[in-house]
Image (tube, rainbow, N blue to C red; front, side):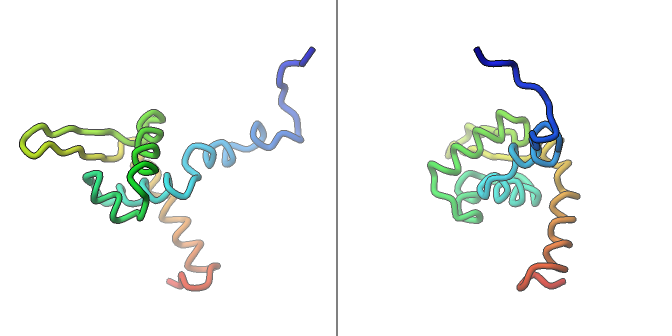
Length: 114
């Protein structure tokens, strides 16, 4: 018989909200899409081009980010039909996080000097 999961010092997921946050946004493709959408609404093909993701990966990532409430989708049915993606308020709230990471990278990572 298994016991219910309990919080302990050895369980870093329960102990640290940073880990939980990175579980939601921390994949390479999720971060790339979120960062690109900080500049404003974009069409699927624009995101594909700017992130370098293939269509299947990008579609999955956009679906995941939509389900988690970071990205919203808008369908424009005029000819030609176009799908646009933008950040929700939750997604936009990540902008200062990206700014801080970029600042840290400029100080500590080779090739990203400020």
